[in-house]
Amino acid sequence: MVPTITLNDQTQIPQLGFGTYLVPPEQTAEIVDQALQIGYRHIDTAQMYGNEEGVGAAIAASGIAREELYVTSKLNTGDHRPDNVRRSFDETLAKLGLEQLDLFLIHWPLPTLYGGDYVSTWKAVSGLVADGRLRTAGVSNFQPDHLERIIGETGVVPAVNQIEVHPYFRNEEARAASARHGIAVEAWGPLGQGNVLDDEVIAGIAAQRGRTSAQIILRWHIQRGDIVFPKSMRRQRMQENFQLFDFELSADEVKAIDALDRGAEGRVGPHPDTFAYLP
Ligand code: NAD
Image 1 (cartoon, protein in one colour):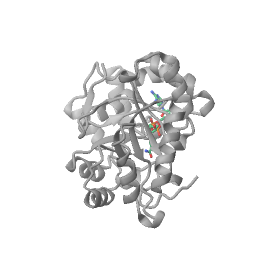
Image 2: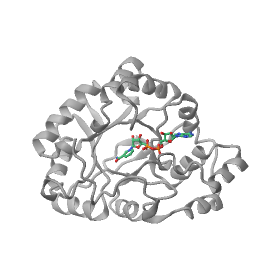
Image 3: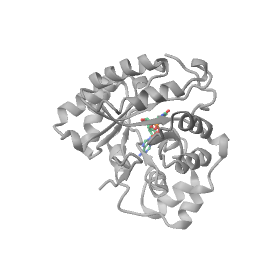
Image 4: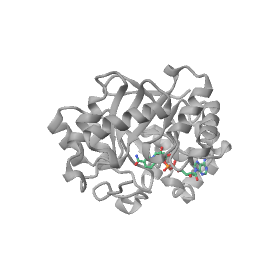
């Protein structure tokens, strides 16, 4: 059973989900269908991934009751202006075939674009909740000062901050800033996008326990209380990543994994202060 986490708007989110970054659009329906068969009920997609229609097709074909599913998408970087937020959110709902989305995030803060105005974007995204078609609004890749600014200027606290977190980059500053405001952390790239899987310390723990390195890393995230949605296109791995709730890491094992942190050197993704990609 996947535990749920209660967000600061009192809604619940499954702590484990399935990520779809780099799942090609034409294969997405089939891959997400497999994930749903395995038991995943939380799917993380984004406008930028170009695969929302495939996610929607898998959901429609699954016959799973809507209230049992949790679906997240994210605002693309080209649509930060408030009118575009509303238009592109409508497109997201249409592509996913949903009347209500569970979670919508500002994908990147883009402090060097739009005159540094991610505050208007946050007002527009958080404003989507009022008309009932969005349950929960959040952000992604927000640094501590970005969080301070949107909260200070709007008084509206995001429910989640989806940020890069894995054993080589624990990202504790952004995690702590999120926690201070009661914002749940979603750890993207939980396996370091594959980079952490060959680590010897993790392989050692995995061998001792008869588990895989991926399971050890994902269990570490779960015990830290973060939300994760690993991505794989191989059924065997999707299955293995879903088996995290029948064992527990000891305090010493957690400490050994904590010690792998490489600080800023450990990042696999771009820095949110400088990321400025536009489609
Ligand atoms: P990840 O850490 O989940 O790693 C994915 C890679 O690890 C896969 O390509 C696969 O090769 C490998 N892998 C997965 N399971 C494995 C297993 N059991 N054994 C061996 N190898 C395995 O990286 P990710 O996909 O980038 O991150 C997860 C999700 O987070 C994404 O799919 C996406 O939904 C989200 N994400 C969000 C952002 C953002 O900016 N908000 C950025 C990146 C990813």
